[in-house]
Image 1 (cartoon, rainbow, N blue to C red):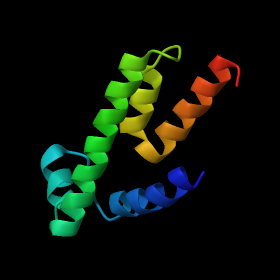
Image 2 (image 1 turned 90 degrees about the vertical axis):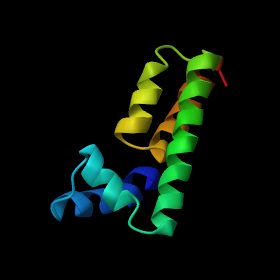
Image 3 (image 1 turned 120 degrees about the vertical axis):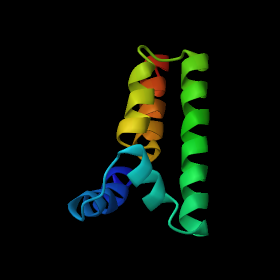
Image 4 (image 1 turned 60 degrees about the vertical axis):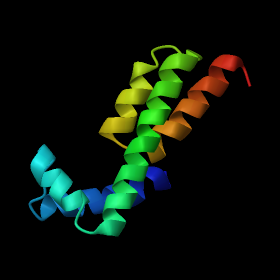
Length: 92
């Protein structure tokens, strides 16, 4: 739940202040300084690694749902959801 609430509190504030997901506007905001650039790149690289893992592991039905959730909502939501789905399908 925190993986949804905490990041999206700031995402909604960004959008309320006129922020955009248009590539140029988004990357300008996401790379405002060295710290935000490092965090942005770290999260996107982790999200790409997660997506590759989910798609190659094939342990859940419709793995594209987890990849979509990752990039539409966030890795902090998609990873626990994926692990829950994987555990449920394994019977554990």
